[in-house]
Amino acid sequence: MDLGGAEDSSIGGLNHEIPDRAPNPELHYAKREEARILNNAIQELRPALREVVQKQQLQETSVRETAAAMGISEAAAKARLFHARVKLRKSPMLRMMRRREDEQMYLLSAA
View 1 (spheres, helix red, strand yellow):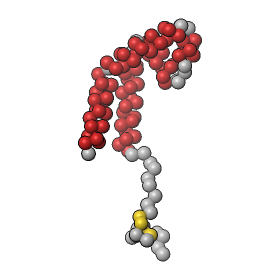
View 2 (cartoon, one colour):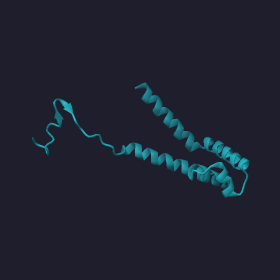
View 3 (cartoon, helix red, strand yellow):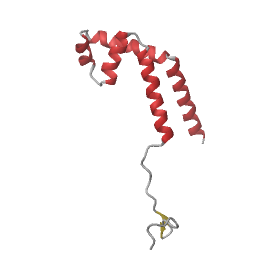
View 4 (cartoon, helix red, strand yellow):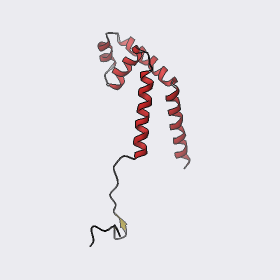
């Protein structure tokens, strides 16, 4: 039995390859690019909106904790989050990214 050879990795006609658990390089790049685009869109928000998004979404704090850290009411924090999300939805780069994702999903479903 040759353990070092790559001639036949099947036993009894079944292929016993160990699946590669490393991230797909294309998927890894796409995720990094999406994160970069999202970060750039967040940076373009006005400071009050950017701060609430960074605290609540990126640092994963509750609305109550976000409001307390910023010295504003919970209602004001919720309003700022709402306005930030509206602005982000209108961001040309994020819209382009979502359109590309929709096209990819369509191509996958058509296959």
